[in-house]
Image (cartoon, rainbow, N blue to C red; front, side, top):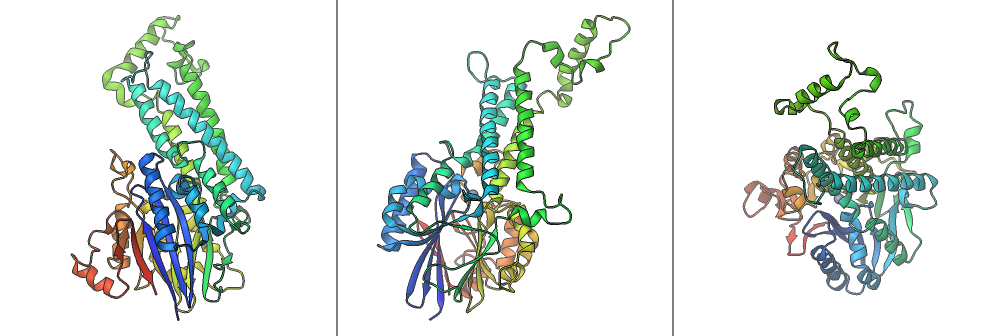
Length: 476
Ligand SMILES: [Zn+2]
């Protein structure tokens, strides 16, 4: 009998990932869970996560344990469920936990990166609190001055990105610790280039290739080190920047030298007109000119705040790039299932140089045989490398996007573009209208009941099933 893999994309009802893979091989059934989390931690989010894990426990596993649980990276929307449903996971039992090498406490490099990252996150939290102060007047209400508005907007941007790390301090880290505690066997920390097997199924039948997250060494040994800039360097540089940023914020609050603040240059560069040497009259003229309404567009005094959101975005990119990326290969048919977690550009690019021990297979070859693509980072624009998607040329390709259009991060003004328009359109072409979404089930134009194109296309593969709790698809 052949190998069959059933994939359930659970509907977390906001941004988040929770995928249950049921692997049938001969008479064996194995369960693999890839991530379990949603963006928020409120009562509704917690209840939903528990409802999902209860379904996994009572309706799917029915007393069996999870053979492998994969936590791809430390963002709330991928691991919060392990915290909110800890008791349920304990009751289920987990044989083996797979994490990335970046979570390995014995890996010095990983520990360093982790420490830098924590430092940066703490600083950004402080920055957010400072910005909150700046956005309020003396009586603690929101002020509507230009500066206060900018502070408020920047604070919101920061909080959005910090939201990935949960409300409680480092909730994702807690999720990882919980998992480590439940796993029966020693945790496996995976590195790119490794090939894994699910306990009980031979790797000659089902092979799991580890694609990311990249290791610095591979990049450090390149001829051009700039091209392969490491996380460490970038993160340290970011920490440097945040220190300057915090200093700038301190200065902003320092009212003592108000006059000095009006000048963008050091005292040494100050020049007075001939009419007066005292400086007070021309300074006032300059300030008048600067503060005139029609000149508002070219004021620069609060632009430094944008730096904070840039830093937060950087930190967010780093965590996404720390995603554990796995490609499951059903050896007999050559079919590949690609789970890209939230990998962004840097992670994808690193696969190009990847070699698998004792294997001739390249990532390019795996991509050409990919029949299921779990779309990276909820369909954001920089989380599916263009050249890689172009290499997915299988006629059977199906895409699954864990996205929810009602998520406040998407619905708000200037909300996140998920899925990004161009990517979404290209996915429709590449999959021949076989895109499944977490919120709607079928993506628009991909429903066989309403679209002829989709009907013909789905007829070539197995029919998806959509229930209130999950979107299901089987590869046989
Ligand atoms: Zn995510």
